[in-house]
Image (cartoon, rainbow, N blue to C red; front, side, top):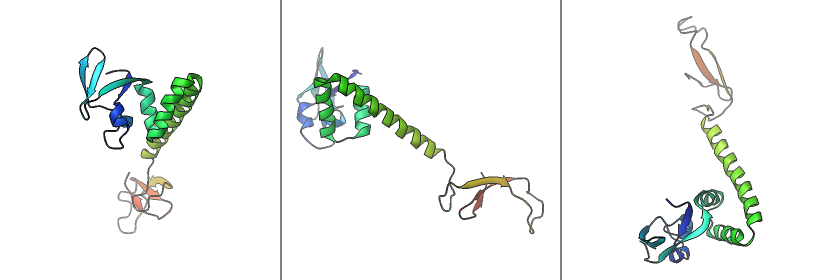
Length: 148
């Protein structure tokens, strides 16, 4: 796989599923550095943008004009481009960390609250001390109890 993004100049102007700003994965190898788009038949060109940078930009905003302006910025002012890419990398990393943290957070199955306490089941009039040593989660919002 190339370390640079390959885009089809013809699909680029269309706003459909095969838009080049989504990345043209439909290309057939012709000669040494020449590829053809299997969707429209035009020659696919390599941008001077790394695939890693392109993926970060898509995560920040899949808007085609945003991607095009970043490609233009890279060509005209590489220092400003690198500063912006550094900011975008930090932003994407923070988003991924917050998603991972949210996925690992315990929530009440009844109300969705994250205000959860864990403790011993305790004594019951019905069962007495049977099972009183087992751990249960309790929602501080609605009072729902469940096994961890």
